[in-house]
Length: 188
Image (cartoon, rainbow, N blue to C red; front, side, top):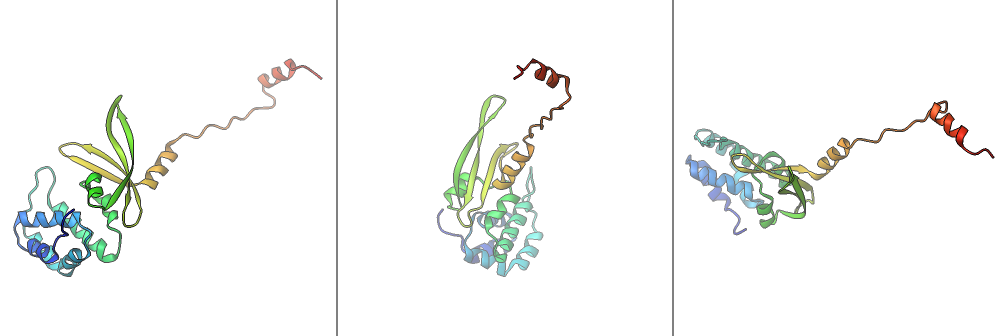
């Protein structure tokens, strides 16, 4: 993964009022789990939020401000002592292969997916390296590639709830079919 981001440098970039520096720092926060870097940002978070609000962050298909908001949410999660894997649920840009390369998750299973008879991107079951939480990750694309992270236990619960339960067969002791079976069975 390389060197963790330097907290003071992240703060300087976020306060710079320069779009490219702010976005670079934003992605560094989204990629890191480094305590020192996240704590440095936390210490000046109110000032950072005020400064970033003054900058047009652009974005064509989706506003870049949503990435900044997500990065700030991660800083708050870290401060609250929550595992940062919870952030996967709230943002579509976490590539499981990259998260595995950073050492944040382990890909424990790949499940083949077939769409209209053709192979599609596999689902990946990932386990957080810090807390062990398992996620079921699907990959898709529209204008860009994105990933949907869901807790594996939630996906399993949905799948089991959608499987129809077999109807209970109740036989009527007075039914004509039952009466015919009784008549045709050999008497003792």
